[in-house]
Image 1 (tube, rainbow, N blue to C red):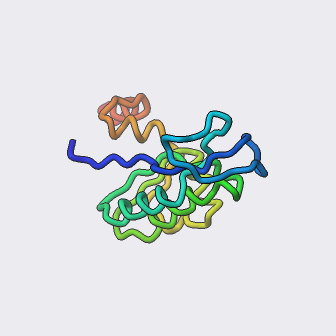
Image 2 (image 1 turned 60 degrees about the vertical axis):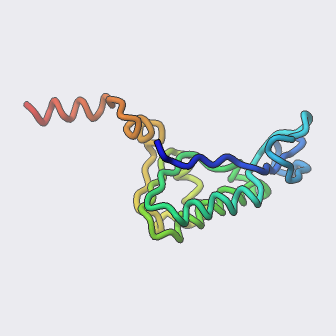
Length: 141
């Protein structure tokens, strides 16, 4: 479709799913088996921020990591900052994304914020949404 897809190249991996877990940055394709990815790393943050800065519009659905814990918030904060700073039209969809943007204090810097993440993605896919269908039937009556 002519769209660029970016995947993380580095990950903040931790030994446990815990706020105070030992963690380090590793290559995305080399996460040690005893660790798990809990955020994107600094190279990925920079790449995503560059792409956001060049975009005319961005739909963001889903935080980059476990943003609720400060040790694993940098990815989400970096992407949120890029969205807040871009000249493009920005949409944040989904409950976790909304919680993250509010926690980071950037909600007023986004063009549109919606808790409808999955439904928003389905709308972009061209799927029929039951709520919209009902409104259309009501409007035609």
